[in-house]
Amino acid sequence: MKDEKGILFILSGPSGVGKGTVRKALFERDPDLAYSISVTTRQAREGEQNGVDYFFKTKDEVKKMIEQGEFIEYAEYVGNYYGTPKAYVEQTLEEGRDVFLEIEVQGALQVKENFPEGVFIFLFPPSLEELKNRIISRGTETEDLVRNRLLEAKKEIEMMDAYDYVVVNDDVHNAVDRIESIVVSEHCKRERIASQYKKALGSVEL
Ligand code: 5GP
Image 1 (cartoon, rainbow, N blue to C red):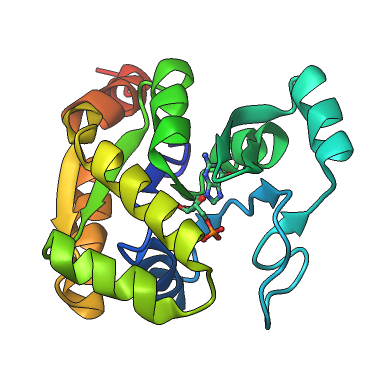
Image 2 (tube, rainbow, N blue to C red):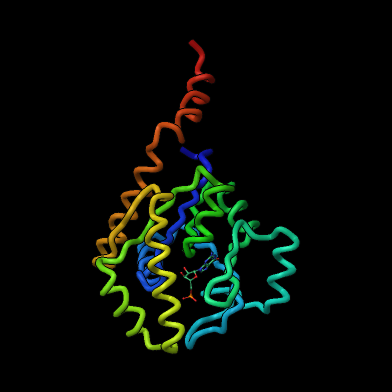
């Protein structure tokens, strides 16, 4: 229905599970979805662009944004800040477009407190062994960083209980299919659309 607000989807899960790849594949298929570009203090990797992959900022800039309440959530992750700017998300939802966040687990738990009506999707690795191989084979990180990311991943998997849906990333296209089904289902949920139907019926003269 036209005057329906957009839905906030939070795609989260352990580091290395393939959140970025799944998110990109989802957006190739569904350009109407809106992606919330995060702010980070980490260095850009090769090929990453400012304002496309992330907004790359200094620690001082991010601290200022935190003080001014500009984030829906933020987290310190493996020595860097990552945060979701509030203004874009709120405005885009108001326009009736669905917004996707792709964030790590601590941040997702904060979103849950502020946006309980959001839909929380946990992307799950086919196995921990597979997850380890993926983190290692990315090859962009030092051994220490790989170890830290794996430790983080173990903790994150234990946090699955806070989520509405679990999608196993056994194959990117299957994972995207499942996420698309979740989007459709959420738009059909009675709780979300009942008030609009009632409003429409209320204006019918009997
Ligand atoms: P990477 O450095 O590999 O791009 O991202 C590291 C982790 O930070 C990933 O799990 C990614 O999903 C997460 N991340 C990216 N943006 C945000 C954000 O805005 N907030 C939070 N909490 N995590 C984020």
